[in-house]
Image 1 (cartoon, rainbow, N blue to C red):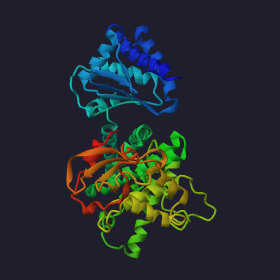
Image 2 (spheres, rainbow, N blue to C red; image 1 turned 135 degrees about the vertical axis):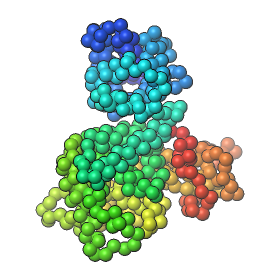
Image 3 (cartoon, helix red, strand yellow; image 1 turned 180 degrees about the vertical axis):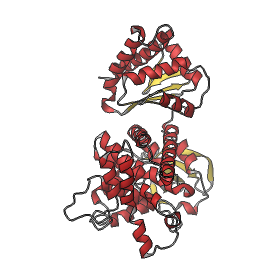
Image 4 (cartoon, rainbow, N blue to C red; image 1 turned 60 degrees about the vertical axis):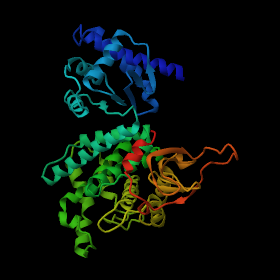
Length: 460
């Protein structure tokens, strides 16, 4: 399907949604004029999922845009569709792979029956969930920028982890379906805009380390799984394992988990129980795959098999357990804890190179390094102009020049707003690059900045 065919198909899909919504106001749900457009919409949208896990429909400046294709020629049914989205308060709709006719039917019914205006995104999500819509979700967006969507997905993932750990500590069994759903959201965003999702793993929250660490390990694991080229279902299994890899620690005393100093031998033996405890907890949860349970149990077994619980000599480890171990190691190294300072992304990778072949898989360390780029997102760099900036994006496979935002001028003064620059830009007078990277900068030596503000300002 070439671009013109794709654009035509996309416009047709949106028109079918509008037609079904308009006819739903005149006929019952079972009427062919309501049902047929829905079935045709489902059939025509399916081929577009062949090379992407989700499709985004947004409302930008009063225009419907599906996967970057604006729909300008509005029929009366499309105008109704646009009006209903705007009135209810739905700025962006995501259609996920696995979409069913029932999902579309229930979504159209929701648009038809909802009479309130200006609902917040959380209220809309709750109603769609109650209606049984499984593969259509809504999200907020700031002028369609992916970072805003990624930030909301990240926040939702934090809430899922908080609730899961709260349930376990309260003696209840969490529902694995919410974990599966949030991982699919993160996986879809990584496929759509990896930089936007990875950037959020660098925005650390010391007070919520337990939760942010779990989400970060899931995101990093999904990114590595994507680079490995494993199937979508395997990536989701890996992502859920990353999200729940430390759930077994809920069975340990909080004072032990939060202890700032060195652990005694007895205390360390207690800590070593958490992979087995996690394996047992996941065994009681619904919607959790066996592969996910195995990865949680094996993520501390080490590449050289000298970890815990110690595997039997003839035990074959899950090939993806080390993905969790590598992601866990990187996020732990780049996070500030009571017992350590946060390492820069480059310092963390250097430490992991030394651990490669011992604690962690050397091939996966190399893959993570390539995914993050020579200068990972969040790295502070000094340029030949003596300006200092932060890496906001990396090119494919970590090759080429990173995207940067200048934060400090040549005198070291903070700019009033980040200035996005292209390191590939040439000086017209010499033909050589206008700016060249001189080296990394320790961010602690500079006035503090809001990393979230900078990364949110960067173009998606």
